[in-house]
Image (cartoon, rainbow, N blue to C red; front, side, top):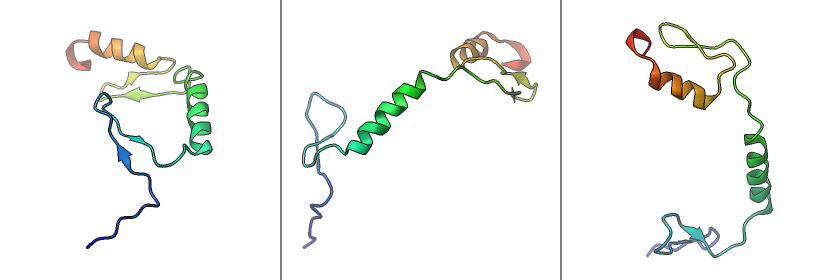
Length: 81
């Protein structure tokens, strides 16, 4: 018979949620800090500010935000698409 390791949290899934939650141990304070820092700095990204090129035709992505590049990719036709 295999012994169960109780040192790690056991996930329990609530039917209304698609992701498991851990109920056997408190959230580590370091994880909370990482989460807060990630959300704080994710709002600071302003786009590429260095020479970049993409694809065989070397599409220039300098100073273009992610959503702008997506719009450009969806709008481009011909060889560059």
